[in-house]
Length: 157
Image 1 (cartoon, rainbow, N blue to C red):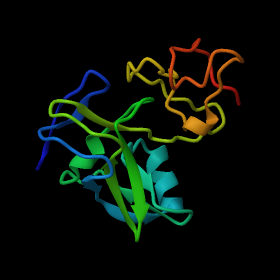
Image 2 (cartoon, one colour):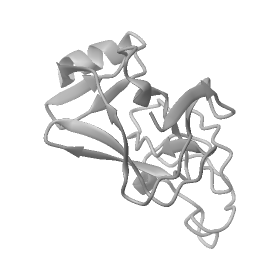
Image 3 (cartoon, rainbow, N blue to C red):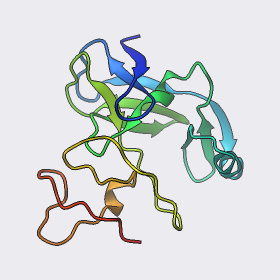
Image 4 (cartoon, rainbow, N blue to C red):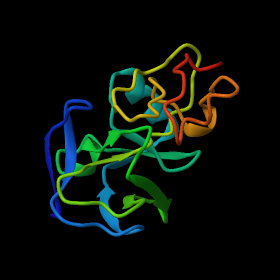
């Protein structure tokens, strides 16, 4: 492997590059048991944190101990992205990545009722909550959060 799992300042364990990665280079496949979205919801409610939706019908339960990709942490300024296709999920480099960097991607969580998960990524544009980029809200005049350190606010429903 060209990465390793170790303690992370973001959350628990994280994945760190041991080698250079080029933009759009596949880094790791997210593996696990294929389950229905109904079973996914049940497992999520039971506390499983490693569920990843494939589409409207299916998800992968990445709790498998052989799934090192489950340790990629969320960041509001990620260096990776997820790619879903042909029933598979891959974590892919968004930009050039240097050895030693923690590998992260935007989890893209949708806001469900009053459920918000605090973000600890530490990025200059951190939104403070793990929520999909398209759902992040910033007061007018503070920017989108992608270039400057915007005023941090609670997300709008």
